[in-house]
Image 1 (cartoon, one colour):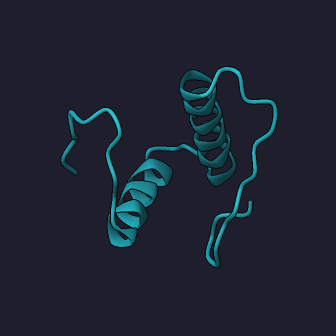
Image 2 (image 1 turned 30 degrees about the horizontal axis):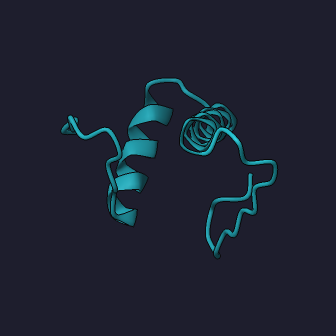
Image 3 (image 1 turned 90 degrees about the vertical axis):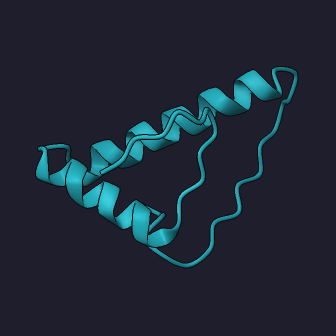
Amino acid sequence: MQQTEYEHALYRADQVREIERAAIAAGIGETQLMQRAAEAAWALLQRRWPEAQRVCVLAGQGNNGG
């Protein structure tokens, strides 16, 4: 797996699946992965829009609901 230097990297679905497989194989559970993703997303939102009082999250179909 290649690591990127980009601060806000974007990944294709197949790349995300591979990253998740590698993390799970390394002993990181799916629930912990989702928790880490949520915390990282929240931290980014707080940095970008510190004055925001509401957040609306729209998630499509797929394995993204926990």
